[in-house]
Length: 323
Picture 1 (cartoon, one colour):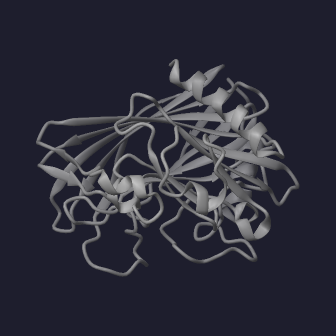
Picture 2 (spheres, one colour; picture 1 turned 60 degrees about the vertical axis):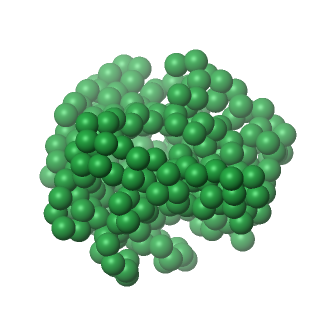
Picture 3 (cartoon, rainbow, N blue to C red; picture 1 turned 90 degrees about the horizontal axis):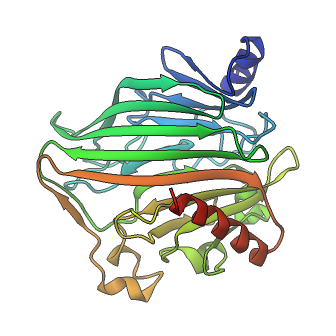
């Protein structure tokens, strides 16, 4: 049985309690919001990093906003970049090793692993639920470089959208440098309808649209707009918290429906934004140093016009920034 269908059937069979519920499995945790399936945290042993997949709208499916390949492929799915598994955390260049494009099918030397270790907290609730985990960033030689503590908070309101926060702490076990790079730190690959070839489009706070106007630019948020396979016009936004290093962040954006919020992107984006040429966003940590990053992800019924979209997501950013 397909994993997405299994996720839907699982929650239909469970008794109801609370508004955010978690069901722990051997390979991950199923997440339900307001009595509807929402996502699944994959511990990601086979992918060399944990990830959330699928991400669903308030309908609970079966039309995810995330690309299904390679986890649960659908007919017509693009098959590029198999490391783009739903929503994931990583970085392409840490002490010269790759913790981003590190899927087993990816070629190239120097692949690190983000190894899930344990769940440290799991608590459903009436208005929110919290899921916390511990992971180790391990070099190709087997040396522990970073300890990751990730807390994901899922909210029941507003009722017409899905909202969750990712609170990320990285603690250095050895001296590490995140090089100035394009591939970091929170990435999200969307379903085919968000691809610009299928009338999807991305926008930022300055009103820039599509890859040509938003890639490598600074913005407190970025949103993709698309019509899902179920006919819903949806927006999927990642919001950068004002407390984050190098806020407002630069964004890696590709017209195929991929984007990432990247606090380590400076000179690497000069070809897309000449002002980035004078910036060195490399970030060095000594043993015991901690880096704290916060992001909010919102999936909501979208507007048709760019100006309306900018107004909507600016409001969501202000709300997150006050927290």
